[in-house]
Image (cartoon, rainbow, N blue to C red; front, side, top):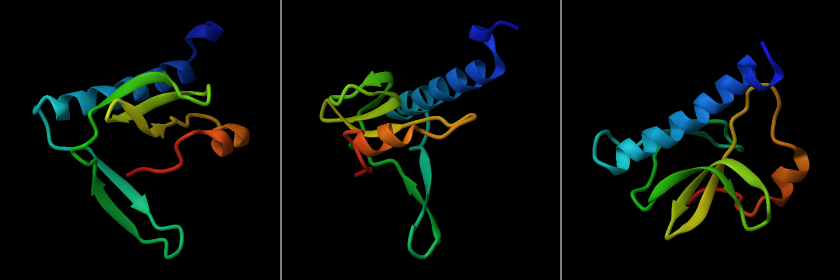
Length: 106
């Protein structure tokens, strides 16, 4: 298997496209809103939260205003409101995590 067609690349690309497709299906009325499982950093309790209706779409490999390219950007009012990074074998680079122009979500 070549370097450009390894399992990590296939898994990474498939996961990104899956997120975009799920959000597209939701916005077109085919499914319910996707649900995020959020964990409080203080008490460690988990809570399910549906994506808010104001999310307009998800864009694959979006260049953010700070120049970074994120795996998936969630768009609100034609602007990126949240970034999704898919972790297969390594976490987001510490520098990118600190400098990324979106920090949280809605």
